Length: 111
Image 1 (tube, rainbow, N blue to C red):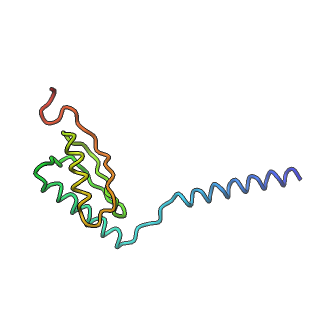
Image 2 (cartoon, one colour; image 1 turned 45 degrees about the horizontal axis):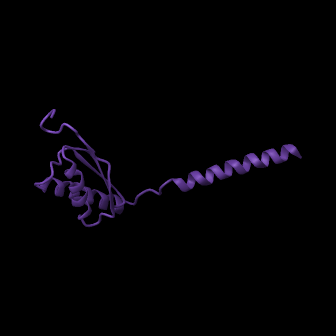
Image 3 (cartoon, rainbow, N blue to C red; image 1 turned 90 degrees about the horizontal axis):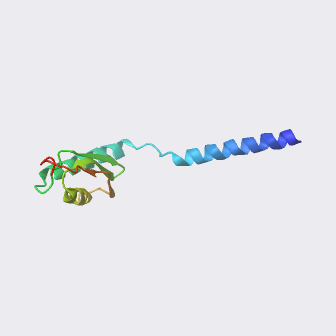
């Protein structure tokens, strides 16, 4: 009887862990979602490159289901804000995750 209770508890624990793990995984993107994400990424990259107020050479753009992630670094704090604003204005962008960091000594070297 004790053995049966132990086996039942272990089974329920494994079933619970498997359930939680299956809920945590994202379903794969469809080919149309992948194509749309690529188009959004290209447009965001182009808009950043065309903006005269942002030095965007070191900004990387990644898109997953319309969520744009900006990473890399910038030399001025305002560039971080402006880059996120430019990305948010691109059609199809659902939200922007700003993961960039500020390069403290920037283009001018040590201050």
